[in-house]
Image 1 (tube, rainbow, N blue to C red):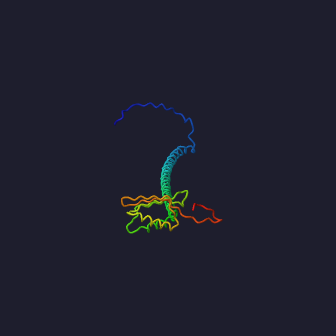
Image 2: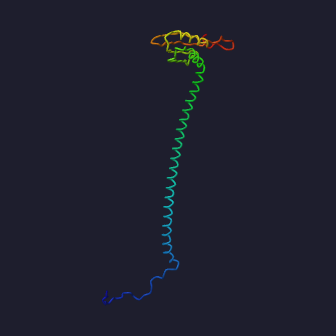
Image 3: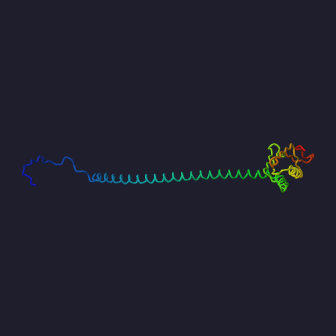
Length: 197
């Protein structure tokens, strides 16, 4: 491209500088300005990096807290299940200990059965108020009432007396219901009477 010749007027006056040049110390101002921008960028990068690290740590701590809470809840559930099993075992132990006095009675009833008789149903109920009284419901598969007489003889040998007995014979089975009361020893002066003889 060719520049056409033109005459350009120079309006610059011949005069000296109005102000003196900047001192050498002030030449550091732009350098410090650019350095401050660079340092600000570095600090912002470090801040965002630390911010991301803090978010990661917070999330990992929250995940650990949630895992510990789930583990604690699982431990509580296992403890509750274990306590329920302990309660069942304690109840069974108490039942076995409470039924121990009735075991000889059940054994004698079973041994008293003749060759042509069988126990269809046996229920022994003890009242909470008076455990010495036992309500016996017995169903025997037999055609005769002699089997009940044999059974009651074996029960009487265990110091039990029958009150209010009822018998029903029909259709090849015999139903017997009675309240059994254990005979108590005569009270001594040291031990007062606890039951009715």
